[in-house]
Length: 231
Picture 1 (cartoon, rainbow, N blue to C red):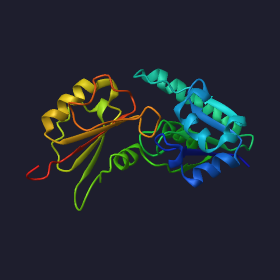
Picture 2: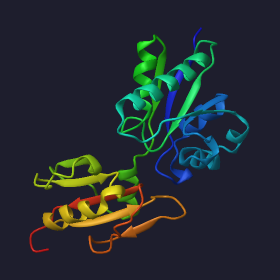
Picture 3: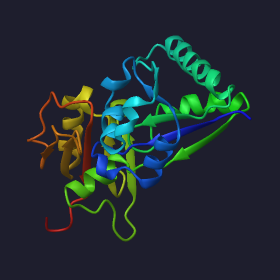
């Protein structure tokens, strides 16, 4: 029988936020894939190994997934990654692919999953705590109440947005364009808070647009909430 490809969410950064199921799946399987050239240098691995120390001795499989807008390079690397994983599935070995947060939210895993499914193999998704839920909890904030809408936006791709819809906004992946994002946030008139590197040792919290540095890192998540009347 062919192996199964698991997309396992390891949460946003704090190893204590990994699910019991994620820990079990990692422990039960020997081939562990991670998006990166050097597995042990990746954030996903560094989170998971704290919860599953035996991960260090498993068969670690680097899958190179560079951040680029070159579509040909993206396709080439996604195909190469799927080929590498398929070689193990064909031998009847399961492959566990570690991904930050949850594998259903802006995850590089989805590109590999689609290719592996198209080749006739089984895949399974193991949910993880999302960065925006963890960030909201870290800041002691509800994300949405009663009938409020919640908008999740990859900020780097939506710099023309004015945040004009009713409800609250989550802006993900804002780091590289933070100066432009801050301008949009200031014009929106919303209450803004941000967590950088949520759950990691170098975590930082900012309570206003003015506090947010222009050089904030890639793992910066912003919550922009509607102001209540009188506030």
